[in-house]
Amino acid sequence: MSPHVSFNRLHLDDDVRLRDLVVECAHNLEPDLRVAGGRLPIGGSRMLDLVAVDAQARLVLLEIRCHERPEWILEAIDHYDWALEHLEEVAHLYAAHRIDLARLPRLIFVSASFSEEFRRRLIYFDRVPLELTEYRYLEVNGVRGLYFEPAGLLSGRPPRYPASLQEHLDLMADADRAGVAERLVARIAALDPGVRLLFHRGGALALWEDRLLARLEFDRAGVWVSDEVSGKGTEVRRVSDLEPALSGLAARAAHWRRLLRPAPHRPGTRGTALAGNGAAPGNGSRESRTADEKRDATVSLNDLRAAPATRPGAAEAAQAPPAPAPARRTLMDDP
Image (cartoon, rainbow, N blue to C red; front, side, top):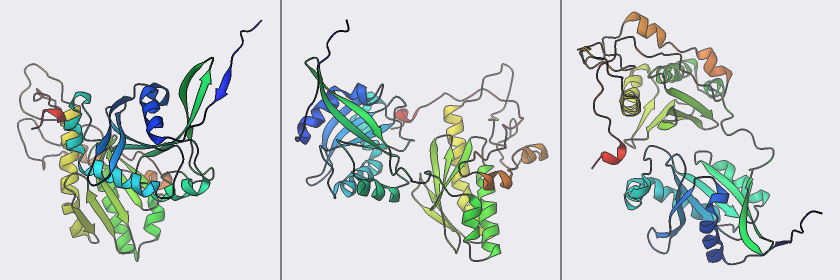
């Protein structure tokens, strides 16, 4: 005879109580999710509900309400914007969690349920890595706790990165502008073997693995390239605009490669060549790439057009022999 199990679903109307329960049951929300703090004031009467860090050391903002409200989305986006602009300060405040400054924070809405209207409005925030989670407050055999279920956005919603390169090129005012945009995408993809492009309806994200390098916004006149590090943007309409737009991205991609993939040490090897930066041993010039290396870095634009979220990087590591790597530093070592 199976043991008797008593099961009751409980009701919550207190946001503060719900937040406390989320802290207690964070392990049910996501394995290895660590709650770093809560009710963090960010100016005026605004506060972040809960600040957490996931298994990849990524900052996670938890927006918690027993029931959704019409103004909740704008409040959450305001909180997310503040956290993104003050990411270093947040990381310093919760230094023990060693938050990865190079990764976009996540935004998780937690509520009992989400209406179709609420979900539909989230479609316009494709650039924010957000998630919906519905909670269930249950009592099982006298033990109370929160249980969580991931909630999708609209059931018929298109993929997050639905557009392709060709769709954006087709909207250009003329063939010349489209040709420049096509060259820009190919050059970005060839910067480093770790670079990939994810296309969406408004443009594309340029990533080094999962580190954001830049945002690309396509319109009829050209492409706007926003550098995520400097915060500056460059408009690309002509061939002469390519180098200014690419220089910062190339340096950033090389930075991530040096930081996260230092070259292995080989006894007796001299010079400072690093795989992927195009420099020959003992020569710091970036203009010394061989013809073979340039050929290896060629990207197939047909592949880029074919799939919305293709990893366009046919480039391979440069063939120069690696040399002793500099001492590995982490972002947390910076002053």
